[in-house]
Length: 450
Image 1: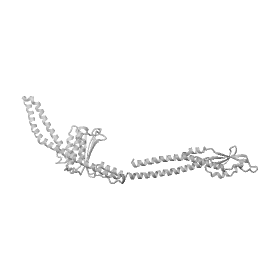
Image 2: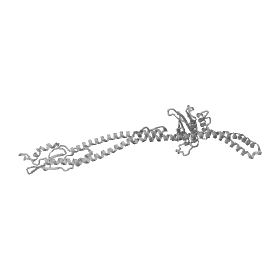
Image 3: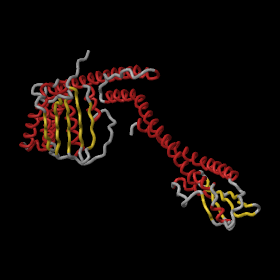
């Protein structure tokens, strides 16, 4: 959930609590107000109702006289009070209200019960000094409850409407306030994606004014630092490749001729010891020497191929990768290496070629050491839309936990090679076993050093 929605939800929750608290307060105050209003109406009616009646005509009984009281009919519209005329034995003669009391809404039922429990007022009706009946002023809560409920609904709707308007205004205001934050987030995302030339436009006045300048200064410093790091990495990698070439040249020009010259002589010496009985005591030594010289020759040949990729400059990256895959397939586990190479690899620079070759070489070496796999897929393609070359190396080895690299070799070395050209390299276990190494390099990169 976004910050905008969270803040609006918090405001809405507070408004809801205020509505509930205000409702409880209004209902509590409504009881006291209703009691005071009912009491005042009852006392006024008690004072106005006539207590002395004129003597009845001959033959008219007391109950009939009570039924002829006209004042109670005029009180049928009196709110908050029911006027009853009763005989001395408390029989009802007439009432200003008809029908049973109406049940109030469930929310204020407790209030209706409390209002109906108020004691009624009584006033005797006399003819002369004789009491022929009495008025009973019974609190009638129906009108008051209806009024309380209508007022409660109206005020609650008004408060809720104010709350909704407040939430809408808060949502709008927070959205406007967070617009600069959205621009900052987009700029940060661009930096995180490697677009270090991203800059932040003016985000607003006031306290936000220095934000753009600070962010742009930070981005410029980061861009300069990353550029300098990439430059140093390129120099380091260039120096490393030069050192490899020098070592390969020395091995090829200095050591290899001597080993090539020694090897046939060692074999002749071993054959002579095998043919002549008088040299029998030297047979094992001569045979061992011939085997070791042959082993040294094979070792030097492998070192030369590792130090300097064969034919990468003359025949291109594709040929060198195929030769590398063939060598890996001849390893002890005989894992199948399947290459999926873009047909347009010839457009890549020499630095691209050597960087991609070294990453693939390191991946295949790691599979031979750790993966215990039977198939390795190498995918190398050029993404014109993104302006980058993408490399993926996948194997079907056993599931292994990911251990972050700590040394400067292996995975760290592959990533440093990619970073030197402005790209990146990530590696990790696949969900169903094996490892995946993914690297990308920008098609346009400068490797010129001062």
